[in-house]
Length: 84
Image (cartoon, rainbow, N blue to C red; front, side, top):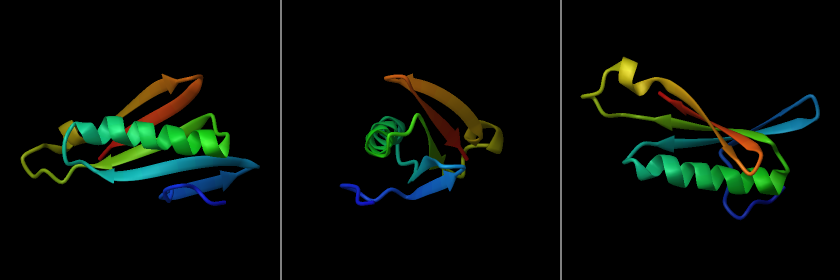
């Protein structure tokens, strides 16, 4: 399946597609741009759920601050954002 931009990873499980977009955090815009990009992939794949995984390489942050899970709903679709 061709997408305008290449999706990083798509898990196909029990007849469903689960898109995953991977990003390295360069600033706060990484999250909003990543969610928007993932939502586009989800629309094209007709998926209701997807994951944005953001890696934070800042050495000044503790692991407690880097690790998180947040969920957003956009047009009836669930976008999960995982920080690591």
